[in-house]
Image (cartoon, rainbow, N blue to C red):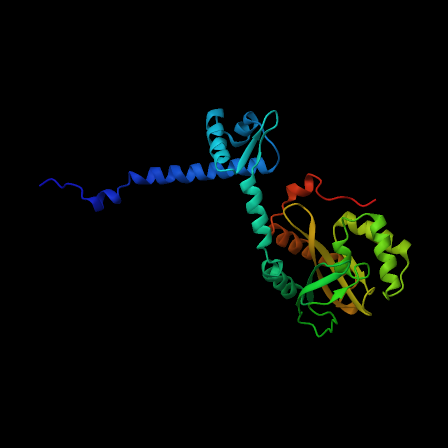
Length: 278
């Protein structure tokens, strides 16, 4: 007897698989369109070439995204980010908990270096410490979560200032000196800061706490702006100049990983999102 397919047979028919695959492909192509537009306004012709699609397919995908307000079209400029994407980006930023996002990275760094790791943000011209992961060494670091430290005498604070200009540096330096920071020479401080800018990380050479040194680096968000900084701190006996240089690569890698989780990418840096102080 010939078998007639039941409803259950039809629901499991392989004929439905191509449609699901096609739908997934369309979704991925739509996301590719968004990725292309995020980099800046793009014409239909350039969009088609960038995605390897014909113009009609690229136009269809872009038009669907315009209908849903993910994209907009500006004459003579092309497609660009729409209000829905801007709103979603704002909501994502509001819901971002930088401590939660960075926690596993900070713990990884503390385990690898065996030293104390901090995370901090800028707060009213001070470095506010949000997290502290103790290392395995028996080294007492006096910092506490919730404390605010001077920007110009801490490695973490200086990392928060890497994008600032020299005029602002001088203002903060003078204010920190007047408020009780350990005495320092501005000429030497400025020379070091300019060197730090070139390599993207900073040092604390016992400038904030006696016999404590640290290596620090900034954390950036999707716009390329510095939103936080992290540091590895230890006793000077464990922080010879050679080790601090070697630690720099690890600290920069962890800072880049956290920045990546916040939406930053190397392309942003290549486009000049960072400002170089004068």
